[in-house]
Length: 185
Image 1 (cartoon, helix red, strand yellow):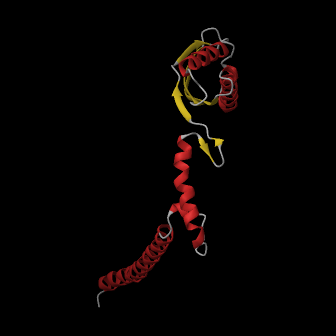
Image 2 (image 1 turned 180 degrees about the horizontal axis):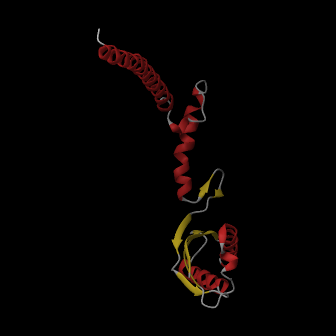
Image 3 (image 1 turned 135 degrees about the vertical axis):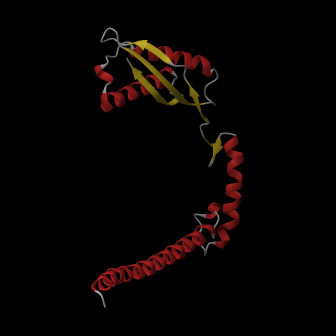
């Protein structure tokens, strides 16, 4: 046998020894993954989500659980659930963009877009509440310095201060003021 054939044959043999086990291992792992996925799918689809708290031996609790679930949408429409306790009806309302100057440095400006989450059943005139919150926010931002709102800690403090002021201005009806964008110049 010529030496060139022996070199080509010895290089091809280790490649075959590697390809066959890797292929078999890939097939086995793929089959195990498919089997595991099928088992998980049958477990999650075998019981409806409405009965997630009921065990298999609690078949007698089935009608009461269904009737409880059937009652909840009706009670939620009226703002009540579980024994007459009022559930807040929350809504997200976008505030108009707020543009104002900062206290320091002299030529620093801030532009903020925010939204509020409030209870619609308690607020009779949301537009007036929004105008008051925007006015209060502008007055507050004019007292802030650029250095006080820089960084993660400054943004966290600003968010907390604005949340507190919005809650006070709305007599506690605003649950949260969400800062969507904040640009300083």
